Image (cartoon, rainbow, N blue to C red; front, side):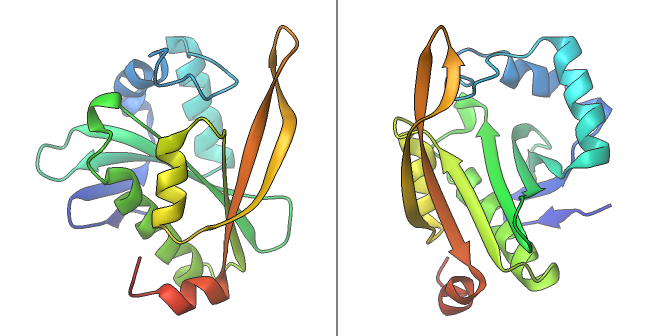
Length: 177
């Protein structure tokens, strides 16, 4: 089982025992405002965790100092060869502490150094300023702004920003991010 550690964080695969805290995070309307799925019920969290343990790479992020869950990060295959997608969600109380950037750096290093991927992508809505800042801090390049590409509900469509990092970009900035 893959487990990554940083100076302040432990990043390990999400398991059933995380469900209660994950539900607290995913049931918060403010936290989930940029997710089409909206808030999650306890049952939906349980289904999500069970499905994702088998199909994708979803990790729970803990503070080393307290063993408290502060967020989740995903690292999933994308439809293009040797390409993965990274995504994150954090408790509002954990925001602004650099945890997302720190956890993402660990995943990025793993992706390019161990899995030898060619390309890493991240997407977010233009209104999600925190995720935009993380992508920029990571050295990801804004490749596109897709208009009305995600159907939300009630004939409301969302725009999406598309960021990426190539292996050559990672190699150039390895010590900087």
